[in-house]
Length: 322
Ligand SMILES: Nc1ncnc2c1ncn2[C@@H]1O[C@H](COP(=O)(O)OP(=O)(O)OP(=O)(O)O)[C@@H](O)[C@H]1O
Ligand SMILES: [Mg+2]
Image (cartoon, rainbow, N blue to C red; front, side, top):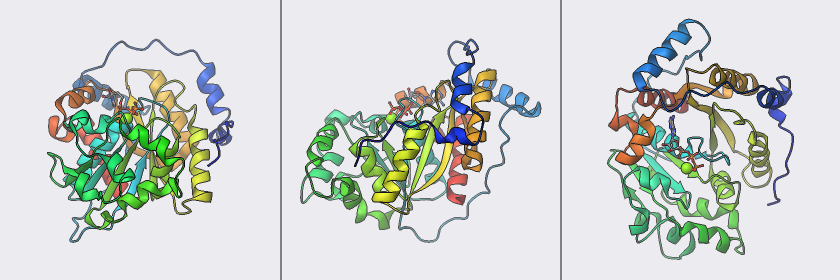
């Protein structure tokens, strides 16, 4: 695969100088720290009433499934760091599982943050996705473990995975290693979510090459749209050369802070650029998410009635409907 070109964002084509507009305006001073959930909810509701916050339509309650599989694979990708990929993978997965979907979460980042977020200590693992990718005779069933969330399993990773990226380079079919590894177990699940690392390297290409769809979390912050064009370009190349059926399932606005005009402006720009590809569900910035990492469980079980849990349930309904 070629090194992706750096291109001017084609997302800017629809709006007038989207990224330029985003980078030219001076940022308003950020409010320090996090708001508590209630305050954020109140503000979000107030600004919705004023007509300035996201218009949330959502999707209906999904019908229960009578049979399971074969899974649809969704890669959660954005080469920008800290935009909520791992948080969204865990919580979307948990919300889909609540709706009776059988879910497999694939930790495809050598940092192992997804595994940690589900209470698994990556350095204590004997087998990880690395062994599945690189060793003959290791099957997905040998590595997959259940989580505390019913209907949700985990394919964990740790730092060993960084070696796979190097070792795969010389292999035939290096871009399809993950697809080959997952093939046999797709019948056991309805949805497989792959948490990608913040890069457009070979691991992310592997995820895109085997995925049916990509979900892009985008933080409602300055510079968040920078790099999205490169990501779209990479998705297009993977579609052309490796996986013609790959499609964008949607863009998820994360780190939304209803207290700042800035965050609402960025969200508006994202909608102008991507239209109905933007999910109606919007993830507020709240301390509840870092707390869940410490707790090692999804927000849907840690704080089931919180706005964060409700937002990921809304996202799950939209994903099921798309
Ligand atoms: N909506 C949110 N509000 C507040 N904090 C959040 C939110 N979502 C995620 N976080 C926190 O922000 C940090 C980065 O989130 P996360 O790990 O999900 O991003 P990521 O895109 O996976 O990062 P990386 O690129 O490093 O893999 C974490 O500490 C997480 O707890
Ligand atoms: Mg991550």
